[in-house]
Image (cartoon, rainbow, N blue to C red):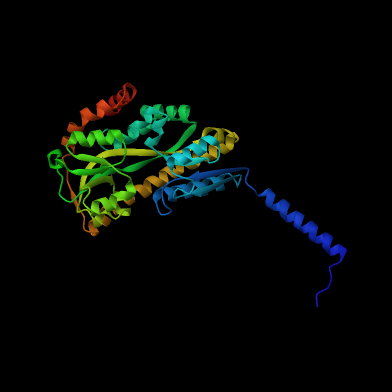
Length: 327
């Protein structure tokens, strides 16, 4: 049989409860960073975001909590950018979409702008990158904290493509990016803008004959089931930024701002290691699934594409293009 608690016991219980609440409050974070992005939970970008969370929470002694939301849980790329500007989200991973505000960001995905990964790094970490980052911060209120290289975009097809002549009339899906459409048209293909979600079915039904994307998307979309060849065009080498809202960053004391920046730098190094290993894995995985990798005359593609690319750029972008080509 249960006994009725005495007044003394009740008061002791209340005191204990108050102590626990106070203790929990002591450990509550002073700042919360909502970090939303489009990649799924298994993607190396999400693994990098989780590494950032671990580093920030550890080195801030719990004063900053990082909440990671993969797989568009906070909305698509543009939604999250808008949310950061409104103050309802804090961080994301984004790329050339920033050109909607900052025209120099268009250089993050220009066909045949970079001949290799080393040239891309020199651009991003040199004066060109500083110009792009400054314009992004000035025009969007977002501060780039780190950058990740993206795998080069490759063409997939059901006949081998080795030179621009092989493209003659090829019905090719491209994203709805005018520069991409103009470039592939100049190369001799018949580019068709189409939502990514529609591509597999369109290939299956032969509405289109080819598509172009990084190896990671070729694998995750199972294009090996409807395409035979990966034509190594390397036609777009690009990068993306991990960004944070300027107001949010500057709302923190200087020591915590430095914690965030240091963690971002370590996250970038961590992601680079994951990226290098993943690129090797992807090529072998697609070969194991029956795809044949085709060596392409990239110089011929670049030469034929260049007039269309330059014509699509404005004066400000063209100046950056020439600066990058000289690196």
